[in-house]
Image (tube, rainbow, N blue to C red; front, side):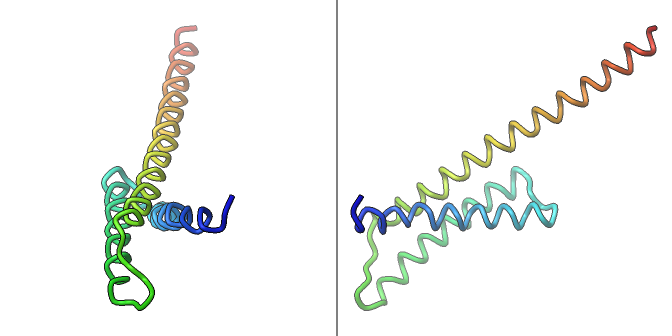
Length: 110
């Protein structure tokens, strides 16, 4: 692995991490929902756009579509992973409550 490849992959990692940190902040404050989850991904994506845009005004830096795509891929990959984890947790918690209801019904029928 070359240093250039490592540095380029940091775009994916840093914006995925930004999104994950926003999600964790929402969860800590009991504000995490489907709506806030998508808004967090949109916000992190928009921040990637503004980050690339501001590089137009920094000597030695430049705006590149490739970097923007890497930023967005990091955000949206993390978004889909968070959605899968959230969906599994919701399905697991629903199964447990249904099992509890079935247990209560079985005990009442005896």
